[in-house]
Image 1: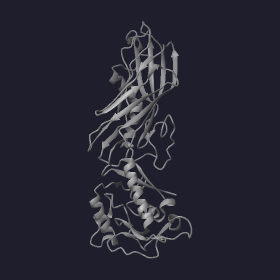
Image 2: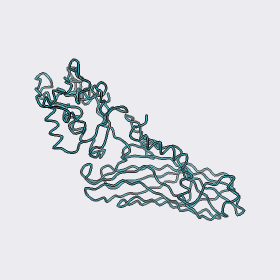
Image 3: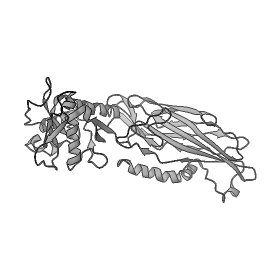
Image 4: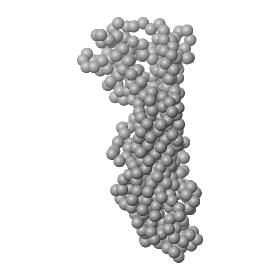
Length: 396
């Protein structure tokens, strides 16, 4: 299932998949040669075309990443920190009579694994196929790579092209504190193929920008693919009644906050002071119910959308505060097990206003704080910017 956020991006990729040979030829100065053009091809040239075998698309929400040593999350897919692309390099050979005599098609897998909590990361490159047709010659190459300043890329990949060849690109981004930038990687492939003369070299772009920041999203430096709208995953098994309340709101309330793929957006609110004001307003008039919670635990005020989002209901509530939200109450579902297992569901007030700006629940404090902690860790691990959208996915 495609993501709404990246639908236009993928349409662009699909168009590029059909046109990239021509586009790359314009960049390199060499046009793909057809049968009709072969009679006018320059003497002793190698014409190179670069293309994608498939568009690069977002990993579906809720899917378990199938991380492999050579390629993650999966071929021609990307997530918040990984992207894997199978591309092709086509080397076409002409003799001195300007007649096409053969071509070699090379499959190249490029896998970038960004570092969300540091300034260094790595790309791995693997030649997966070499398919000569007609008369060809060995291709000697040295790949170079570059990314936008202050990002530095150092490529370590070269030799005679053959199946199984591997190389890597090392990256470092010394971005200044309190700043961020968005860039991607440009590649060139200088090569020789004696007795043919090389006058053009392949030039291409990874095509999926990454964003690096230093202290803008969270403390420290890190990089992510911003085209991927991240998932906050909360399980019923771990967060019980809290997760059940969020899921009920997503399924039943008109806004469907953060539900994939149809729900209204959830966006991070970085301002902690404003978030605290939101929480106080939403919990105004809240009275604990002594029978909710485990021994040593207690009833607590939980709200959704979260106070630390721009969708918090506090902004739409009048003097009534959280009383204007739909009211929910944790339900005991078992006598043994974890807090989440014993308080695993919620009951909803009669005749709820499904257009209300929020839902407010009586939730055991352990579950409330646990879900809040998971949101905080998610923001850090995914480097979510202020006002950046995300999905909330409740699992079993």
